[in-house]
Image (tube, rainbow, N blue to C red; front, side, top):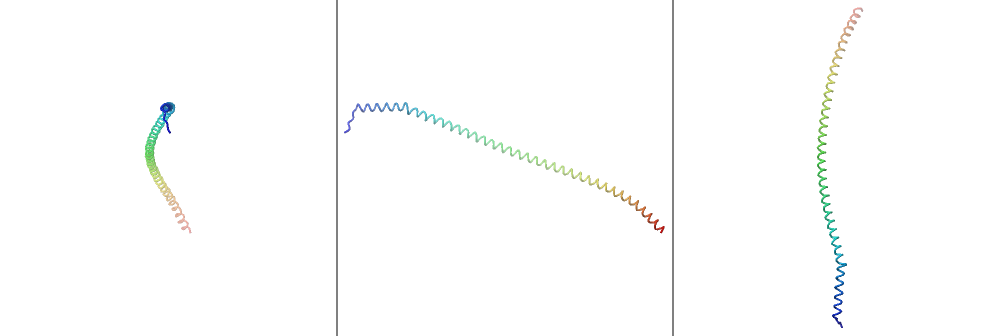
Length: 140
């Protein structure tokens, strides 16, 4: 059957403990250190990524705020320019209407003077023609 020899059991135990010690010294501790380093690097990278994400979100928010402000400022400037343009248009239109009315009044005055001159000329001609007609009728 099965015989257990204490000396061999002791040799196997010492052999097992030596193997565990050397594996721990040369394999497990370096691997655990590498895993820890890797975990630290990953954690640091994740923290940096979170920080960058937060900065990006803050930058996007700031940009959106500035863009909104710029849009409202542009809208205000546009409205101001539009109102100024409408006021200038009304002013120019009013000035043009005034000039047109002045020109029309001057033209009417000139036309009246020309009409009066023509009437006076016609009156003089009418008197000459009537005198001539009377002379011809008297001769005939």
